Image (cartoon, rainbow, N blue to C red; front, side, top):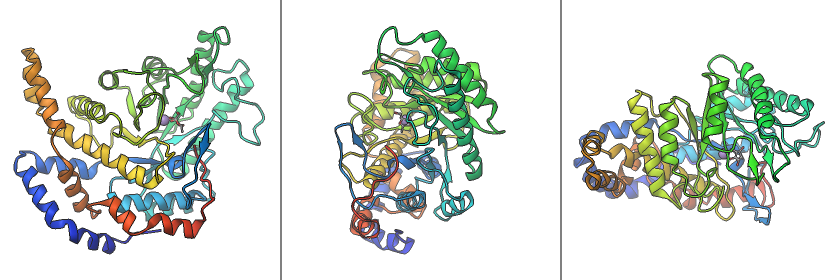
Length: 424
Ligand code: LRH
Ligand code: MN
């Protein structure tokens, strides 16, 4: 289902005056409004192909209806999101959930929807029906060389799909680990995993990157073989300069200072990208910014500080991806909210007077330094985010257009109410 530019312009008419009043108010108080707008317009977030249907937990899954039945419909749904917010211009595929039936058709359909392919994701955390060897006791860590070989070959296949689609990076998240003391030799598990990753790394085409995603627990609950940023950095350093760490916000132990991790990984030139979501307890995969918006702002604050210190391009030098699961919300509404939260946190962090902050840090003026950050976080930057979207031919209020156009109802009519999309 599509929402045309004309339709979006019509909806914007009603909200334009009020937006211009608010935009005038905030931009008149800013020296760098145009620079911030330019950065917001360029900033694109990749949408996970596995999060376009209703998610679930082991306790249950509640269908929303109208879920995409194939990769083509997933691309259309993301195309719709992008038409509304003009900040969702990329799709991150998960193999084998999204094997492209015909890569060139899929590539042109994505282009028609102004979408590019971001990182490809491999899957050695499930056994596929036609799979020879099981990943029950892990994949790249496995004591059996044949199982490791199977996992390596799968990742190389994923790279091939990505090359056909124009992707240029591979995310490797390994569910490998152990549930009980004594089950695993940690050192051998690390070395098996490193040897396996080296074979995948060797298969990376020119210009490709590998992202090593870490996770503290689940589905293993005693040890994870890529369990934290330190272990991921160890792998990335031992693999080479095409390998980087990937920070999924939900993959940390409670109260972890993620913004400090981000700052140090950037300093080490080993931060590859993000899986944005939010959580209160574990890997809850909730809407971005819905639980800890200040943490999200602090992460963007460190990102801008670190990226500007190295002259990096905010929009293209790191991989910006969402990784969420929608148990009670309409997946498309949830993703619209998540992209909005990311743009707001980025805009707030762009307000920070870094020169002043550094001067105050150099004289240990703790109160004034904190006030610099909190006044940026307490600034309503939504008119800046809306103006960037408007200049990008998007909707002033994507969620209300989505609802007024009765998109979900239409999708249910078109696709039925019982469809279960591939993914989590
Ligand atoms: C693991 C993870 C990983 C994906 C999966 C869908 O928790 O974050 O990034 O492969 O979710
Ligand atoms: Mn993830």
